[in-house]
Amino acid sequence: MNALSAQVTAIATSTVAVVSSFPADMLVIAGLLFFFGVLTFFLGKGKILALILALYIASFLFSFFPMVDLVERFHISLPIASGTVFSILLIIAIVALRRVFRIEYAYGRLTTIIEVIILAVCATMLTVALSQNVIPVTYIYRFSPIVSLFLSKYYVFFGALLVPLLILCFISTRRRNFD
Image 1 (cartoon, one colour):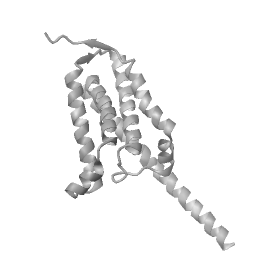
Image 2 (cartoon, one colour; image 1 turned 120 degrees about the vertical axis):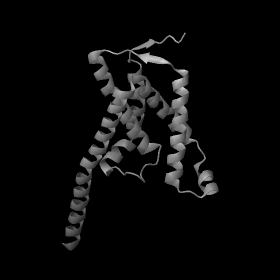
Image 3 (cartoon, one colour; image 1 turned 90 degrees about the horizontal axis):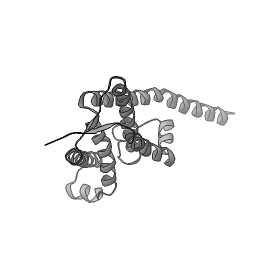
Image 4 (cartoon, one colour; image 1 turned 90 degrees about the vertical axis):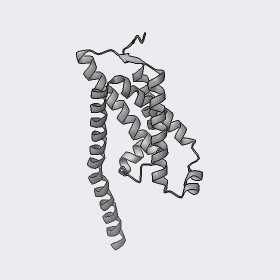
């Protein structure tokens, strides 16, 4: 009887821990969504699109970076090394994309607000998916087991990578003259 009671108590405790940490996860995701929404609104669609595309490039390069050699050679911790390396790769990719693609995005009243929201959702979805699968951010924040289990599925990760690219195909553009 005591063994059954201990198992029930353990299950109840873990369930309460998971349920109580879920609102914190939603607060983090809502904060990212707000951040990217404000960033998109004030900087413009062109710069957030460069950021979204730079996230793809930086995560690809980061996944092949020889991190172990860097940590052993310079005797720095893995979270600091990985954060620094990913930030440098992201900045390089943003600068390169902003220099190569000089596109001004068409603005309208309703379409601008809708596109800002859509781009903020895309950037948030991509950031959360990459943070769970490519970039080791568990030293900064660890999502609850429910969210981590959902984000660790390969088809969810693939969808989180594919959906922003598909949405970028439908954003209206017009070329700028630089003559």
